[in-house]
Amino acid sequence: MRELLRHESLVEMTAASFNRLALAAMEATEYATAIMHFNQAIQLRPDMGQYYFHRALLLQATGHLEAAKADHLIAVRLDPECMSLDFERLSLGMQLKQLPKSDEDVV
Image (cartoon, rainbow, N blue to C red; front, top):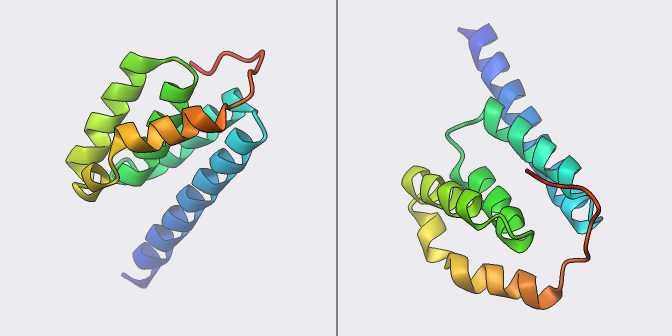
């Protein structure tokens, strides 16, 4: 039992680390890298709505609206508090911030 708890804790920490790496890559306009890290976080913890929400913001900001909507729906299903984050308002804030263009395709 102790070993299982240790494994679950390691998975949770690793997923959180991938999410932080993705956010940093997004800030650095390394969008393909950000998507890769979000994907890894989600693969480890597919139950974390926050990870889908973050990826949805990046997808929407880079023009991948259908994928962004799909991720947002998953985020809200997994974590109803994501609905209170008001997806449209947050994404508008990111658009106002004017994410720099990247030569990388994120999807």
